[in-house]
Amino acid sequence: MDACPSPTQRSARRDPEQLLGAARAGERGAIGRLLSLVERGGEAARAVGRATFAPSASVEHVIGVTGSPGAGKSTLVDRLIAAVRAGGDTVGVLAVDPSSPYSGGAILGDRIRMQDHALDRGVFIRSMASRGHQGGLALAAPEAIRVLAAVGMPVVLVETVGVGQVEVEIAGAADTTVVVVTPGWGDAVQASKAGLLEVADVFVVNKADREGAAETRRDLEAMLEMAASFPGAARSPATSTVGGLSDPVAWRPPVLLATATTGEGTDAVWSAVTAHRAHLVAAGELERRREQRLIAEMERVMIGRLARDVRELEGGARFEEVRAELLARRVDPYEAAARLLDR
Picture 1: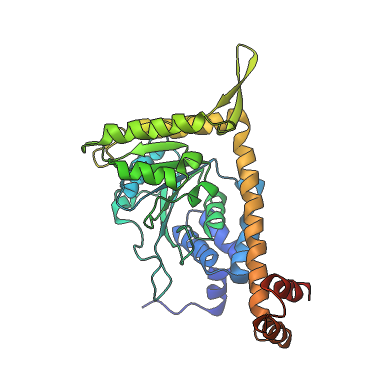
Picture 2: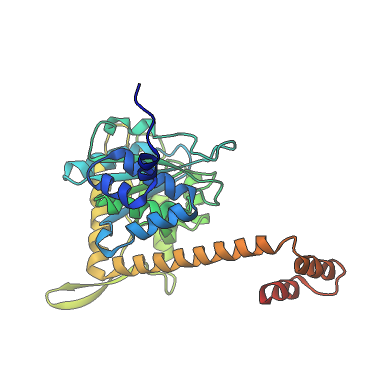
């Protein structure tokens, strides 16, 4: 039996700088420990954030895959992993799963449908718990993406869990958002209701061997055409230079048919994903999107700190005083909040 680790060894296992060095040297366990620190939050997560936040550690392409439950997202992600590896790049996969009501951890663990790549040293797959966050995307995801970038993974795939309606939140964390739907009018309607026409960069009608796939594709394309006809509806404004002339171009999300279980159509999906990245780079849109994400992340951190400060106010003498005035209808909720926050 191995001897118990010394306090120094245990400290090294938790030190972000040392863990980062070990992860860059190829120690996969160190990557997992860094991500665990990120998920737990607190000062340890802040230390990881400081260690990995650097321009040189920017990931080349973050690809989000989202869609309703049962749409075949994990199987499609498995195919995209194979496409990345065929190009010679390493890839990190973050699979955002439902949270256990008991432990708060990810229920599904590392995705069994991606185990074809389990022995590939160029692939790192990690399940992350949504922890009840609305939309299913863990708050720790942006930090986790930076960890994978910092250890040398140029491509990161983020798959989100469906929660009854196709999710849109992944668009806030990805350069390219792939929305997966299945044959049938219902998913097309849900895509419209959920606002995915505005955030999807690539639509995939998966399980295209089923009846109704062509109709679903037609419906989505009609909805995209209708959306584009409204003033100011153009997405991803860009410019491309053709023959020395600058010409405005807007990305039109392709609607592709695929059957991920057999691989049919998945090469076209990967081609569309890489074409979208090339479009973003040519338009200067990639950097703009990333800047917007950083600002949005800062705002989420600010809101989180304000929420913590509010919780600390509860139970205090001032809180009880304002609460009594509110319940007595002497002040309204806006005035009550202003008194507490101004204090």
